[in-house]
Amino acid sequence: MDLKFLSMLTVENDSKLVLLVLDGLGGLPHTDSGLTELETAVTPNLDAAAGESICGLIHAIGPGITPGSGPAHMALFGYDPVRFEVGRGVLSALGVGIELGRDDLAARVNFCTVEDGVVTDRRAGRISSEENARLCEKLAGISLEGVRADIRPEKEHRAALVLRGAGLSELITDTDPQRTGQPPLRCEALPDGGEDAERTAALVNSYLDEVAGVLRDEHPANMILTRGFARMPDIPHITDLYSMRAGAIATYPMYRAVARLVGMELVDTGPSFSDQLDALEEAWLDYDYFFVHYKYTDSRGEDGDFDAKVACIEEVDALLPRLISLGPDVLAVTGDHSTPALLAGHSWHPSPLLLRSRWERRDGVESFGESACNRGGLGIFTAVDLMPLMLANAQRLNKFGA
Figure 1: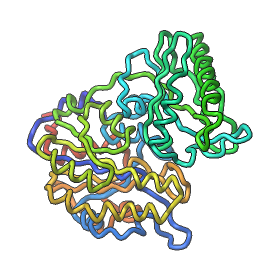
Figure 2 (figure 1 turned 90 degrees about the vertical axis):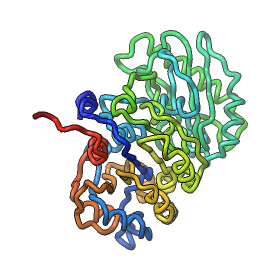
Figure 3 (figure 1 turned 120 degrees about the vertical axis):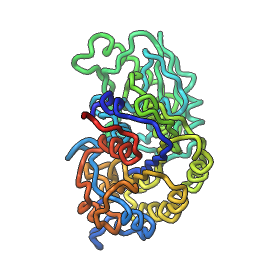
Figure 4 (figure 1 turned 135 degrees about the vertical axis):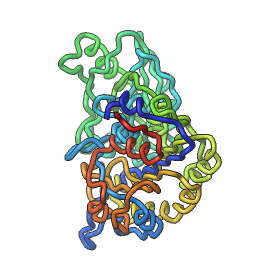
């Protein structure tokens, strides 16, 4: 939906809206039980909430499209993720507190393991954040002609790289092969990139050659992979569009970054879901709209650990009554995308959704799972349409037309 049109209809009131995102929530049936991770989990509180809601399934981008986390969250916030494309590098940089100028070029970094010239582990065994910080400090001395390189730890094996200098182009390729058994790729200019892209690719390759030398004797993190080169986009803020004070309660830097990018204020929180609920309770009077992000369902799905993902879902379910007791006028619970343990990565499958509001119809769904939500009254739709539904149920949209 057009943002200007939606903004034109927006009115202010005292309603409270909560978007709870269980990252990578959707799954695929286990070969033994035929049930997904969500359907396997014991979730009496999510089931009860589904019975008080209208349910459905949402595609982050569209049918058949496997989304990255950045565009998936942009869609959940009401932005067309194709029109408002945000490079992963920008999100990584903002997430670790790097201020970006319009000419700065940012990339997401994975510390990785390279053996005999090929990548054997794209995440370097998920090194600790402390080890990551040590390695970033070690790389801080690398210099390039006419360009300043700033690399900072994000979390575990992830880091953010920012190149600062004149004439840098984002029209260059990633160096992450996205799978093991392949050598790290060389950065190249895209066909329409021109001289700036050629120069930028050469600078990136020079930087990576220096990194390889500095990390030569390290293990398991003896190299880095880069992807998502991007510069800062111009995006209207959710607070201005919808006249809402918006707060984000997220633990991972990337999700804090995408929230910050659209104008949300970051609420301090500890790492656990219980900590996040503490933060939500403390900030309840300060904001109208809350984005609460739970990461670990996605992490365990990427690990291919079906049982661990089930346990994460059950952890959230056990604490859900604390959230509901706050009395949000609108509560949406969903995932940004599916991360089936069977695939050990993101997938194109739509995410289950429950939308709880006194102003919504009920649809007879009595449990929260993919098959049940497939029978829900909302049907299957794209995530960009969730924000208008939440605003309408919060009585924050005027009638259009006479």
